[in-house]
Length: 98
Image 1 (cartoon, rainbow, N blue to C red):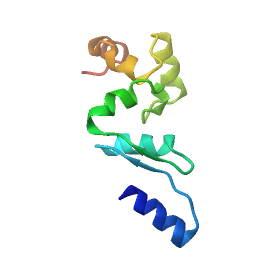
Image 2: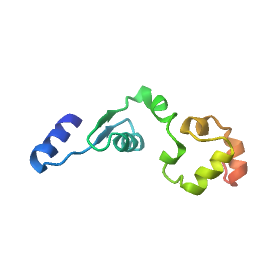
Image 3: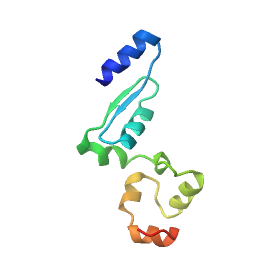
């Protein structure tokens, strides 16, 4: 289906598009971004952690330069490192409730 979509856009509009396919919108969006400018990236449900964990935390919505710097000070540079970090420690540091 994704290949057909890419082909239809190219044929009808003479444009290239990147398509990301994943089990949730968040993963599909990142996959699409990583496939730019003319890629097709498929992330199977059982590959989500393998796909996300090596990516920089800046790929997460809401993680800008300030948050990225704060996380780096804790030694957190990847999504996998963030996922493995103790939730209560992050909650205590941010003042947010887990």
